Length: 25
Image (cartoon, rainbow, N blue to C red; front, side, top):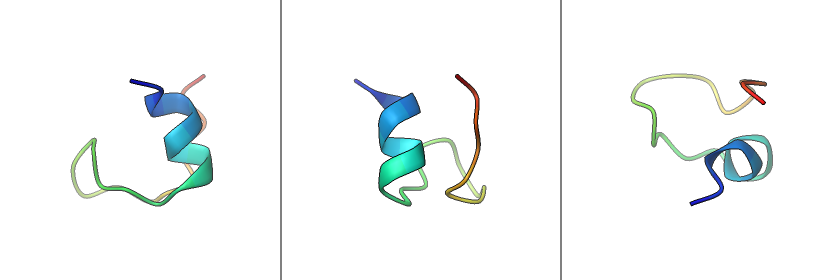
């Protein structure tokens, strides 16, 4: 799963209750 890409592309709370813009690359 491309969590890094999805996190920067689509705002999905996959990591919990965090903002969609989270550069964890």
